[in-house]
Amino acid sequence: MSSGLPPFDPEISLALAERADIVVTSLAPDEIDVLRARATPPDIHAVAAEAGGAVSEHRAPGREGDVPVTVVRPQHSPGPVPVLLHLHGGGLIAGAVSDNVDAALAVAPGWAVASVDYRLAPEHPYPAAVEDAYAALLWLVAEAEQLGIDPARVVVTGVSAGGGLAAALALLVRDRNGPPLLGQLLVYPMLDDRNDSASGHQMAGAGSWDRTANATGWGAYLGADAGGPHTPAYASAARADTLRGLPPAFIDVASAETFRDECVEYAARLWADGGDAELHVWPGGCHGFDGLAPSARISVAARAARASWLDRLLARAPRDAEPAAHPLPHPHPPIRTLTESLT
Image (cartoon, rainbow, N blue to C red):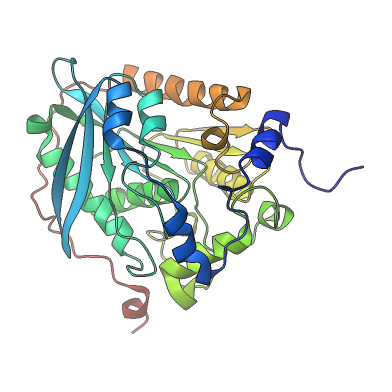
């Protein structure tokens, strides 16, 4: 008998049951501290060593203080290498700079990964996270020669909330005429603060990160304005009036998760606006399926698809091109907060 839910892949269903202690389905605002306390960030040095990389830690100048950035670079790659500017997941309320870096390294052998320790909500609401990401990008391009990376081959990437921030950063770069991005690799991104899609309602209380948890994350980041009429695109990328002029995008999402429909709609809008986008909807996956069950067949296929897209993107990219100058700090005004925008 059908439950009205898309079926979970058998390997994902087993992982959801076996790892119930770490799966977040629903989350209330008063549970944010509990979520943070139970998280154990990966050891970035161990992750880097397994991938044959070397770790360096840096601080990018931001508007409200330095932004920590951890760079993992291949140890034996001559010349400047392409780089993933990585934004971790965690619903905008949790997560650490080392989260999801192993997945980024796995799909981009020979690349560097620069992971941003952006500020978290509710202590640091919008626009803190996206401004931190933009500051990290400016620093990365300015320091490219010292870091041994190619400033013409920067791809922004993120998982879940980090994917949403990556999409918002691409919009911000476009509108500020910032350093050009080669692409945006969006892994089941959190794109729409309205939290009212058919898939969100369908998956309420099921799988991982349902619309109650999603409301908690957006509420922490945007306050009472979450879901209202005034949310800017740099907070919630789905709110953008147009998606023209953005770098090529890879978007993947699972069939049995809250973000399914907003991701499909975002890809469709990119195409409608003349953009370059590749979309994958992984059948039977839950939100975060490849982290939950890394050896599952659809997880292996998802990583292979991301790696293939990066390879194809790189094949048509210029090498060692001179980027436009972008001094630190950037000359553009900061994003106004929601409160400032309405006064």
